[in-house]
Length: 316
Image (cartoon, rainbow, N blue to C red; front, top):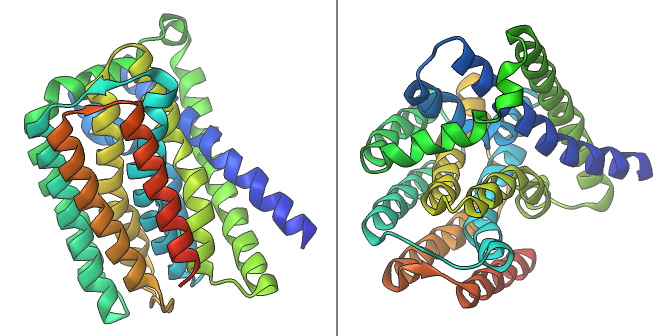
């Protein structure tokens, strides 16, 4: 069991590191190959910080443990909207929020969670359900893209603007990207097996372990990207990344594993946790839209909401 815990922690850290390398080197390579920043933004960068959740989804469902997939993805929603969002003003200082953009992105996230709720309420996924969830991401992306095009392009530049990195050979970036994706896959595989063993040994639901613990590790790439963006005063990039990642987690991250390897959701608290996250998404959207800023007071409030939800869910 000690070995399983060590593997769990190492792989959790490894996921964040390999995910970051995979996205940055893939984006740089794509830019060097002449692919437009717009295409890079819509594909690689928009889902880049969610690569760990996506790989976890596929591998967890392949191994027959759909609860790990859904738990990690929904837990990442909670972690990013509260803990990660709350840490940003405490680390980098306060920043303003554009009300219209935040409301639209927040509504897309709430709608995505409603679809997840309706599917999970049945207790099982069909490939059509999973396909529908993935397709809705395209719909949300079109809406968000229409209001955040300039921010998306700036985010791409943030990923690939390192001149020293761009001067290196294409083979170098391609090699690092491939190795990083392989690293993400390996870490995901061993992480999920460790979750299964720890869950069985301590008699903890796989869903709870994934929702409360794994989601923190898989949300670290968002924190790293957003801190970098805020330090460069790219406030809208940070906001769009957090809420956009939540939407990806509620659609593609859950749907891709279920599309390839449909699994039942056996956790008896999945519905309650999704409802909690949905309510928090509504609260966060309303409060931030009204205040139009995220300062240290808001940061403390968001972190407090995270821990209230954490211990409430732990008590279920």
